[in-house]
Length: 131
Image (cartoon, rainbow, N blue to C red):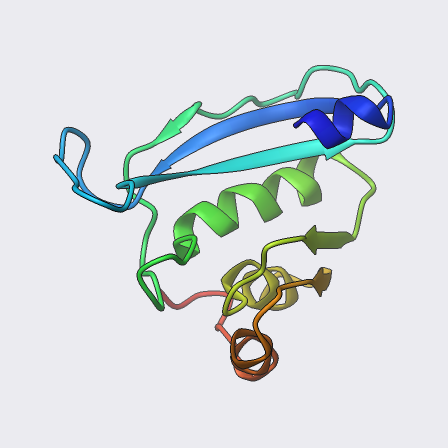
């Protein structure tokens, strides 16, 4: 979020995604993650805003993954509310966001520091209708 602000961009929305049921006590690894949607310039409010907390991330291909349902929420926002057709995931891990974006007809660019995770991301495909 600081990077977006430093580049004079704007935060369109920030969502909390529960990886485990809300109220779960987790030791060592958070039971939630963040999704942040940023834009280069200020945007109008969404026509159909969604919830700020997603209680079910959906299927996760690994313990740190963003769930498929959460990825669909982000991609659906782009399709319904913007002209953007490219998803950029700067911490792509094994590529769930990228695979969901591709399944929904969006282009996707992912970056990660781990070569093994990048190989996994390149290989991951997700049906647009499956979970």
